[in-house]
Image (cartoon, rainbow, N blue to C red; front, side, top):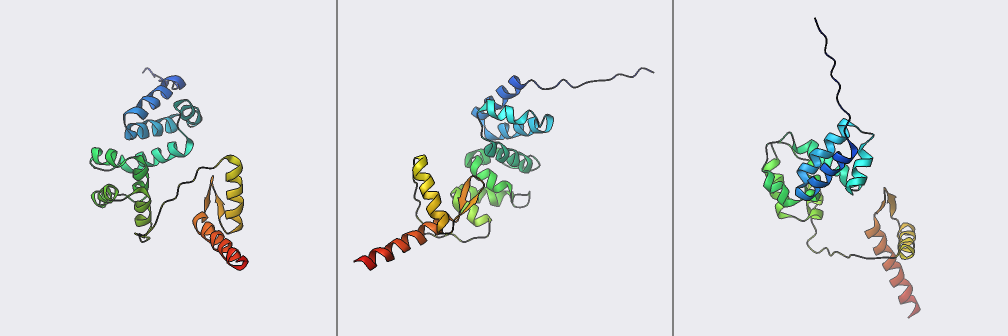
Length: 181
């Protein structure tokens, strides 16, 4: 009896990175699948692949979460591609075969923010307004210092509760201004 030993050739970093980058330009579901394959095949190589492909860690892990959730399901691929990866990652935390159609419908109907609120059990506020701010590093450091003073907390690379803290800061400033008048 002859024993044959097979070895699996380790993946080539350059070819993996190119495959990931090519998938990035095509569709996020292919990209998600390739990233999961790289992570499973060689976790030590994963950070290098995402770096060479120009994908941030947070996005890479979000895409893997999408693949882990959706690859087991029977779903309309075009609909999911249509809603985009940002909504798909929100769905990934909640989706199963039973609620797949319903959640895809929500994703088509609502914004990313509203979808996250709905799926986390919150209620939508129709009167909300969005404010986008661009700061220099120095200005952002001041912003962070002030909102943290008024109750925001550092969470990962961001700030939780910054909206409430900013409102508290504005109310305090308004009270100060009214006292001076």
